[in-house]
Length: 247
Image 1 (cartoon, rainbow, N blue to C red):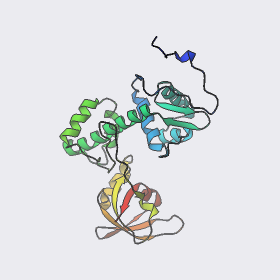
Image 2: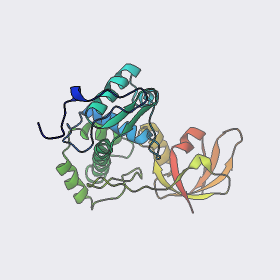
Image 3: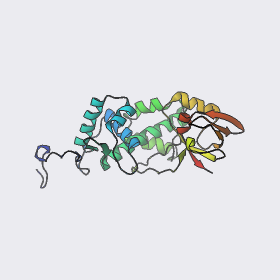
Image 4: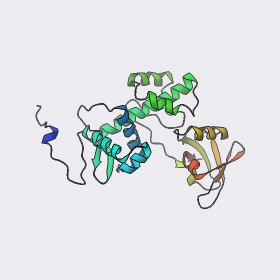
């Protein structure tokens, strides 16, 4: 056994409230497809400040039972991809963040490749990319990205992580947070609802589109926006899914 190494059995169990974790700098086992889905979800939900994600929020995001989430979180912690803080939640280790960014890169490059090279629509590409991301190698994804000119963003405006695991921190606000008269450009839309994407396309609400907020109803009511000279009404939930930048 190398100097300074010890088996898991030799390590003291963490006290209540302390993170259960494995070291970040060893040779960790590659996560399974199911584990990759959890890593992506934790990355999505984890606060920028580095706080934890509750297991209940994770269960809701993934549509899994609380028991299934708890078991997977413990497994991720044992393999060095996450820290599980009892009664608080879970956060990714550096190794877990890199694994999450790797699978996010695969997903977003595949989406763009399917649209640009194979003629998929932006509203039917997400599920296909979900299936392919777990099987595609990093080399294949890098070749896809090169064929596309190493793009910075996917079809829905989301930044694509680099092969080195870096991703642009893009500033923006939800369209629902802006008041009447605001002039904005669409930067990003959520990609996980085909019907919503088709509706946005019917209004011309793509990344890069300029939008003016004409009015907003009180008490979290719908907002009216002008897109290319036409007015459209959006409910709050839909407006929340559109990330914009003020002009």
